[in-house]
Amino acid sequence: MAFIHIKNLDIFFPIYHGDSQTLKKQTANTLFKLSGKIVRDEHDHYTVRALHNITFSITSGERIGLVGSNGAGKTTLLRAMGGIFEPVRGCIEIDGSVSTLLDTNLGMNHELTGRENIQLRCLYNGYEQTKTKEIEQNVEEFSELGPFIDMPIKAYSSGMTLRLAFGLATAINPTILLMDEWFMAGDASFMEKARLRINTMVEKADIVVISTHQPDIIRRWCSRVIWLENGEVKMDAPPDTVLNVYLPSVE
Ligand SMILES: Nc1ncnc2c1ncn2[C@@H]1O[C@H](COP(=O)(O)OP(=O)(O)OP(=O)(O)O)[C@@H](O)[C@H]1O
Image (cartoon, rainbow, N blue to C red; front, side, top):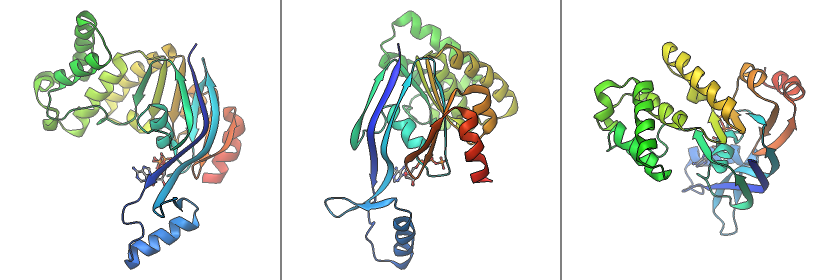
């Protein structure tokens, strides 16, 4: 049974030149400090406190919506659960295979072709040749890149990179799916195909965590909502309970 256990999680980012004396930087830092997000660490350096004292558990079958204003910490939390950021304090315990739909550049080598990137990802996941071939065909068909599949990614447009990254991430059915809603942005025909693929993935996954600003997505997909504000959990409850308080606060 898949699970995610997070206990007392803190994630800080160091800010280089945070103590610089230019007027512009001083003003920005003062505003940030007033919001409580910039703190001094034990070495007297400034850090942005992206997540603070986060504790919750997600069990098999749950579909979590992460909400919160810009900078609340949603992406940082998804990245921490995806193993991209290490906890500064606290711990994250995960059981299950994790797939992330967070950033088209994650794990992509821009010097390699689309096909080589697919093969590299399969190698990383430890897939044998038959499965790799299957995934390669699946992504090639879905992404509709034509001859570009054999061109280096650095020659792709942002839409083409999105198609490849999306196709690759959704060709593998994980037990835990972590997703940022912006990943669903794209042209209309792509969106239709993307939606179908995501629906299948969401249905098959044991656990889904999606960061979103859209109440429709939450009502449609989520069984529970975690509201983050200033890097902390403000509310953790069923969708209607959270949306009834959250939506009026952002209107
Ligand atoms: N690499 C980084 N370096 C420094 N600060 C960062 C970094 N990444 C995020 N932050 C800071 O951490 C905080 C949380 O950011 P995060 O991107 O997780 O918010 P979010 O809720 O996803 O916002 P949005 O809805 O705008 O995408 C913000 O104050 C942000 O400025």
